[in-house]
Length: 154
Image (tube, rainbow, N blue to C red; front, side, top):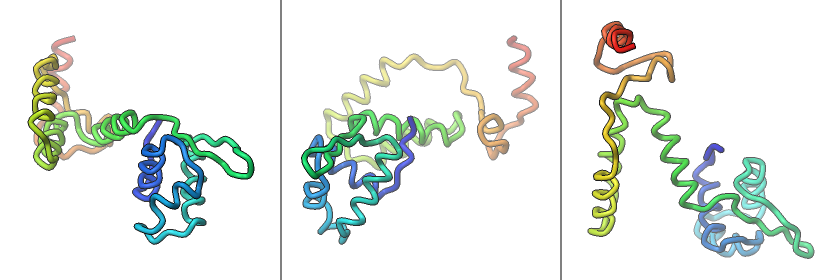
């Protein structure tokens, strides 16, 4: 599943994750005023999220109840993976370092990151995958030499 959702849709999702499940009225109470959105706008966003299979609906009387199809943690994991998929494998480290630099982290958060790094098995080598993913490469290396090295190891 892809997390191809807009910033506005993400605001709606965060409200629903907070409430665990919600009606349009409950969602509107959470987000309408701070975003200057009408109930019609919220309904449009909910319809898009249902189409994208981020939400399911059940009928309760005359109202629909919206329930997320995944947890916020699962969604964040997918977003992180999608971000890495958009970047050359050799530049993943830059993305991670920049995210750490930009994030507000507690001592406990840093300990958790340290433990994750200590448990991570290092790769022997990370190959550029730009040509496979994007059909173009801006990395500072020679693909011909890299291809020869791969062929020699086979």
